[in-house]
Length: 371
Image (cartoon, rainbow, N blue to C red):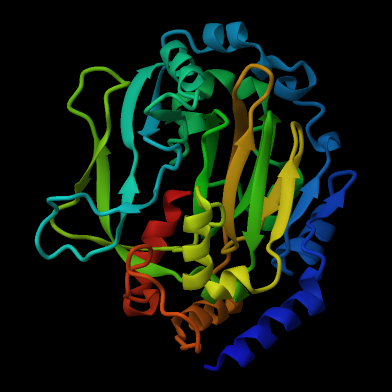
């Protein structure tokens, strides 16, 4: 496939249904199930629903989750999972560590966070303390896998068990409900999920960069060897190291970092990934406390956050099963197509050479359920 044909697809998909402004549509009130299904789910189009949709939630209306003493009392004695990384990005690309097995290629690996279980009060303390730029570790409570109903069930009365108008439109209850508690250093690298996602910010703000599945080639999805952070210290604040997973596992992941840490890194990103940096503007939005983002299945998203006055952001999201229909077949076929463009070859310092098309569909589906 030629680059010009791919760019035509991006343009036509935006012009015909998604819009060309790069802005996400905002609704002042919750949509009816019919409108939600017709205008957004069927169209695979995101939207933000105003605070009116959650004003009846005690967590929002009474600001319960802004009160640390309330949270600690409600979760007294409850153990929760905390993900620890050196930089705040759980499940992200980092350099392959020195001394890795000889067959490990030069370049990057896909590193998962070190997970430690601890009592909630201690978890909240560590999330606060690691928000400082001087902290060598960043803590993020983001276990997923239905963690709200498993680890935080004591808070269930503060929110709805599902989003009624979404449940009626989608014809099912959510498969998983997840809670996220992080500080200003917590981020999520570009990825996609095979779920219809209703993402509710309760306190603080979340910032999203979004790309539709038709623009998959812009993110240079490649296969990376899996790795895991670990620490030999008995303290949660011990220095983290990366260790390659054995036997070797390849994980398909997006290569682009939209916010590299230095001008030199940005120059390298722009040179290596021109389809992202020279393509259409990503959709961009900020979801404020009480608002709901509908994130359609298979949309790529990068997430950062601004904490509240207490220094943390709390969100809850509802994962509904997507329908594996003709749209999924189209998107899967599009992703399987490779094409070459007459620009700079991606640097092996920041991008491994194997295209995701070389991987099985099942392996990609499994990896994208990380969140």
